Length: 201
Image (cartoon, rainbow, N blue to C red):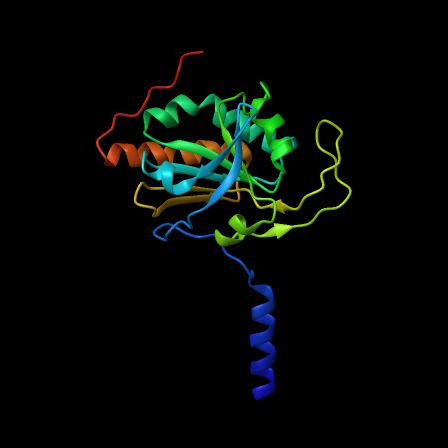
């Protein structure tokens, strides 16, 4: 009987994920990282940015890959709505700062509207409880080899007090942006800020 229970516990432990993304109500780990905006490199500080209001911290696998291109473009297209709700946005990946300089300025994706930070060693992603995967032999949408690991696609809405207000993961890149925007606008509404109206196409 004891052997059976031991085997059951081991089996359960193996089946459970080793890492779980931080959830609503938990404190967002502070970080400082080299980042790029519109192709210009700078040092990004989450603490400094939270002094100005809520921050959307979105982790994505790699610049210049299909889903990440869609997600970056969707965040860029909706930047004004996020700003109207008082929130700023920063993308975080294991890309080098050189790759991010290109990505942040690319008119098709970040379009000079989004700051993207380099987490080359994955420490920031791990602090947020995200899984890191190594995938060898992959090329990006430009045909260039990807020489870094991937963090799972997960977005955190961090309130100005440093508390995680919402965690969005396990959905498509577009749904990730849509759900994040809804969470930010709910936060703004609770704070008494009017939500921005979508632009007419």
